Length: 351
Ligand SMILES: Nc1ncnc2c1ncn2[C@@H]1O[C@H](COP(=O)(O)OP(=O)(O)OP(=O)(O)O)[C@@H](O)[C@H]1O
Ligand SMILES: [Mg+2]
Image 1 (cartoon, rainbow, N blue to C red):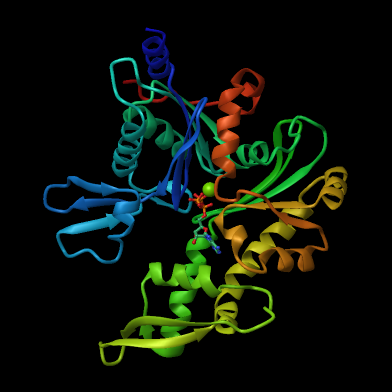
Image 2: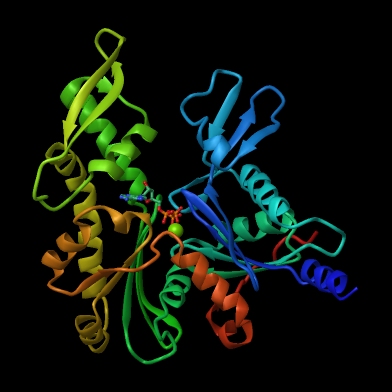
């Protein structure tokens, strides 16, 4: 009986924190931790419009589907580009982890990029509400990241977070539970992949897919000279003959390809530092920059930023999970953290 009651209460009181990212969606259940981490991809049957797969399964279809199926990423540059697909995706993810019953509709805390507009925020709220959330709360990603790292965000000390995701790079200085300076540029991991695609197209006249580009970036990508040059075999389509072709690329070439993208990120960090009040810059000089998001894992990026800014730079322990962990912690201690939530000016759709 107690077991049953516990179960019932768990469903009834479901509360989830979601990091709805351009590349990955993570879901944290209150009291349990992260229970889902999947690519933000949806595969749709073009004739019927039916969703065929979401997450990992749909990602495997990206770039490989025939005409009847479309595998899409419904988010771009950190914001929703296809409202209905995001709704379907969230619904499927939530249904997977929460057994639905009449009272199971969860309360959801969703992390959104700090630079999103009111309209974009509303799209997130409404997607979550239509996907079954009974109450939707929003928090800015850098705040969630800072909480996830375990930084003392309530103190009058400045902490700088640089979160390089798939679609956006968020740079924020946080103090006294708020964002003091913030810039969000829509340049991050996806642009790195695109730069690799273009580099290989121009240099070798070979077309490769985004997924291949991402693998190259993860395997041999770097932005600071490595001790030894690495090589990787890459398959693509010869643009002249149209036939498949295998080439070998080196880590030096990839560094060259990534440089323009990475410099945009470095410039944005420098600009953010210029716009930060002097007192807080002094804190950042002491405490350094915290790098998070999947892009923080790019080899040598920390060294490059350190060299360019003359500041200590550290990559956090769980760069891919930090926002979800922080949002989860906020949910666990919601009364303590209520003041960090984004207040909405526009009411969301009610179900
Ligand atoms: N080892 C690695 N080296 C370089 N890039 C990496 C590595 N691992 C993951 N990435 C990149 O990190 C990005 C995904 O990061 P993350 O999951 O933090 O993004 P996201 O939160 O979904 O996106 P956003 O916050 O922009 O909405 C992808 O572009 C991925 O290719
Ligand atoms: Mg992110």
